[in-house]
Length: 158
Image (tube, rainbow, N blue to C red; front, side, top):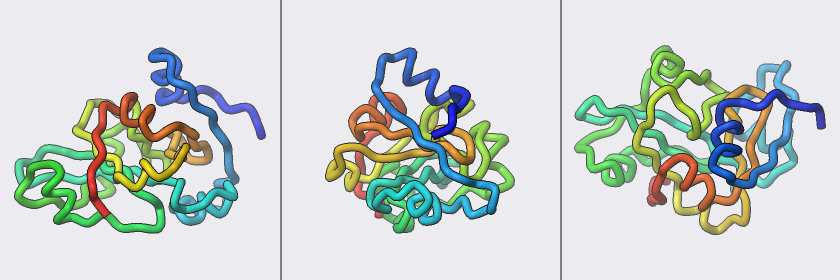
């Protein structure tokens, strides 16, 4: 495993004394979708979580972390967030709002704190992987530690 420069997400975890590990994967081939990342890291797709950003009817932004093989259930996401309706944030607005790019979006360390939800299926895992905030690096973390670091809550969102 090559040495990785600490990302903002890693520095935040260090600053609040949360244990984590990280792993790198090859990203030069352009295959950075979650399922490809699971295959490249050799991890069960049930343990690799993608970070999605959505906007509510109120125009508030919300962050959702779900296993890579699943799609966000927009009705469940709306219910969890207390919104009438939720839709995915257009990709062109992702970096402007989060500071992260597609394929490198971490639920930890966004430009601004948004209400964040982690799918409750994470509770079935000892550890899960989420983006470290750059394409090519994943953080390996206990679900409860992710929830603490991201100031998130668990919800049924898939």
